[in-house]
Length: 81
Image 1: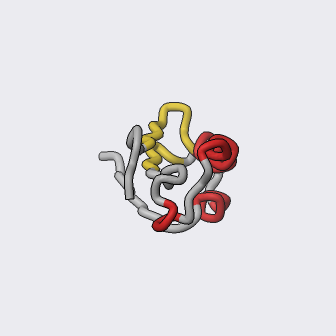
Image 2: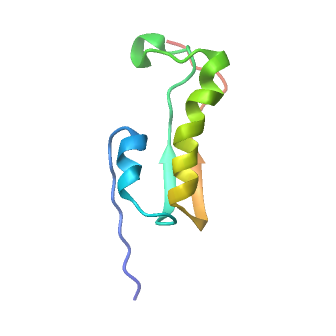
């Protein structure tokens, strides 16, 4: 029987993921802040800066995700406060 392991880490993904080797995750689930729509909750990220803001985390996701792994990106088309 193959062992199944589940670790849930909470924190800034740029800090947490640096401790993991390449190709070590089968699944990554993320729900990043919504651009500007929840400024009071998250501090907001301007729409025109969102892609540039998300590129560094996505680079880390791709680095640690196994070639057969899955990335789940949870977001809505529009969120309101």
